[in-house]
Image (cartoon, rainbow, N blue to C red; front, side, top):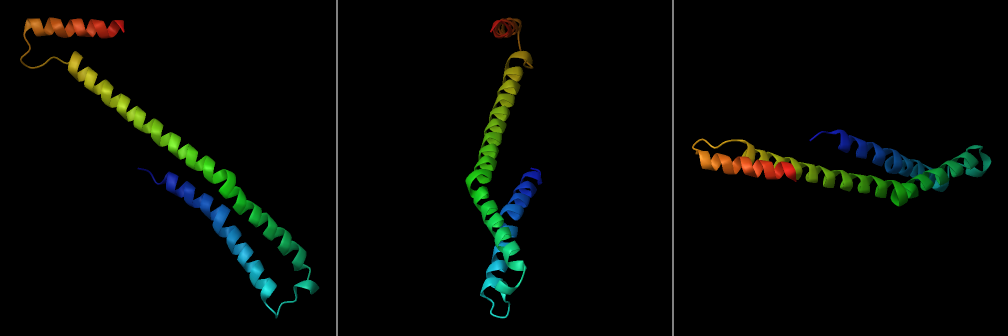
Length: 122
């Protein structure tokens, strides 16, 4: 298994949850710190608008991004299982019908060839 899906999920969680939560928590700290006068600084309007964007990004993750990523992963793994099952079935069919057995007599060979012809017609 490759590390790419886990790296992708880690980057999505970092950019859409962890960093915005850190930004919002820093703003909350600045709002409740009595030593910093937010009303007197130019930082207040920027901080509030940026925190609204961060909250919107967190909500977007839980509303749309998480569901699309999870749906995509579920679809990927279902298709992967189906492909593995089909490949297994193809190998079993090839081994059963196309490869001769070590002690095969002429009648068994004819029967196997007839089965191959029936499979070819399907």
